[in-house]
Length: 173
Image (cartoon, rainbow, N blue to C red; front, side):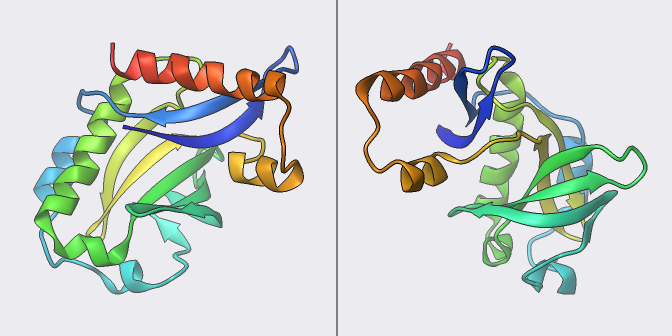
């Protein structure tokens, strides 16, 4: 599976779509996540709409929402490193199959190494909330680009699609 995550500018000033892709191996923190995760362990913090801290990360702002989770910009408290942090939707924490799916997504995403695939740095658990930590990308989302420019010329579409196709290919290699 692949979801377009962010558009970013490279050093050559050409637009590349950074994609978040899935394909298979364990990630940092998986053993602890499995050991600590129990169905129904939804904490009060998980039920809050806007958490302020998750593990060693301070939440800065929400970046986006999807069917499986919410992605935040966050900063590691001690390293001062900006990251993207994905939390499961709280209502999904009650379902063992959804928790397993989130864990598989994290493991799979750790496997893919490609210039157009965001790197997953950690798979963790904080007070019953599984989370993924990813490289933070600067730029705009595809949705934002399409709001700015309702009709993209064919060369611009190709410039966006070729990196996506390349990332999907890497995820399924």
